[in-house]
Length: 234
Image 1 (tube, one colour):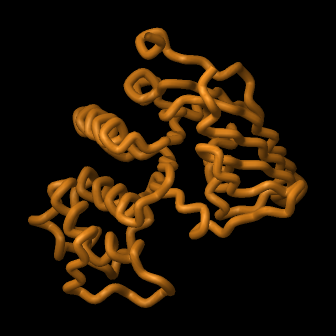
Image 2: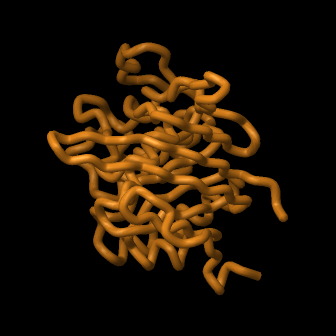
């Protein structure tokens, strides 16, 4: 049995007025590409935010490739920056007042100062070239196509050399032909980098194209055992 790449145990009670929602997610997987799948409102995004350290769990243990990111029993809780996870959210969360180059360079900065407009770090140039963003490097997010925004967000996630990628519905806002092309690009990139990837989706096409292992969530819990799509099993 392969060693665990993802070892996750999360518990959190969320309150909104009188409503309560419980996250109780546990899974362990040796796959490099894991898909959290389930309907809207099943707790997928909240699970990702807890893994990333953006939100704090009531009880947690998260390890990626054997590196412990948090363990409440041992009072370990690395900050989001210390966890070194590259995150891409559904809306891409690009800074509207920064150019493509500055958005990517922001991930290499310490503190909250904006990168200079002509920042030309070697690693920033590398990802601008890798994602074919040279022609729009000085453009702002509102001037970009959906695919260019997604590539910029991926470049920003990768420029800091993360230990794993967390992706939240990265293709949801794109039309079908573009989704198909970007899925293929993401698969090629992940394979080349051999970077652990956890992807959230409710799209069956994402599952078929990208999952080595599928974990289904519903109402904040894992409802089916982790499974490997038949075409990936070999």
